[in-house]
Image (tube, rainbow, N blue to C red; front, side, top):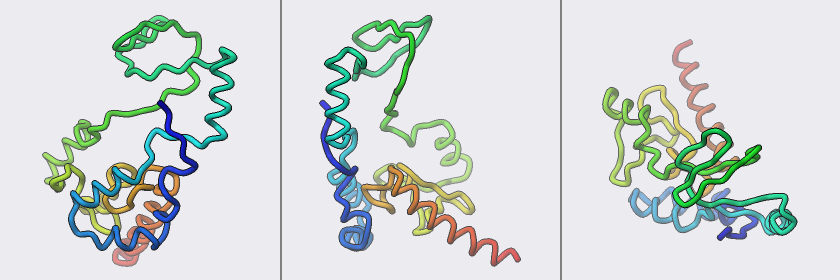
Length: 173
């Protein structure tokens, strides 16, 4: 079912309260375990959950939680069901194994982009994976912590990448 949390993780992860000890942890498997434990993935705030329940009860929203196998001719096929539709308002979710995406595989094979024992990119504090290639989101989990994949993580990533870009500009000027 849907988990109810006001935030994607404890707000202490947005600042030094929790991030200092996280960043001082050198073991990537340990960092990965922290991220997995502390992130409230698939959650929503209580207020939105109450609205969702109301719309489900009134028949305005149908929620399906099984992976889609095919969409064709106004029918969504899942592992368990075929559901006719007129309009899709929201469809979320992604494959957990983000490192198996074709572009990522090419980077690893063609550019020797390093990965660690957790199958994450080996990145710098600036979020640089290979020279002049910076990452964010799920690829920066082990540097940004539990908020790495949400808007606040995107903001932190943008700040770090901006600083790195400004330094690159200084060197090339």
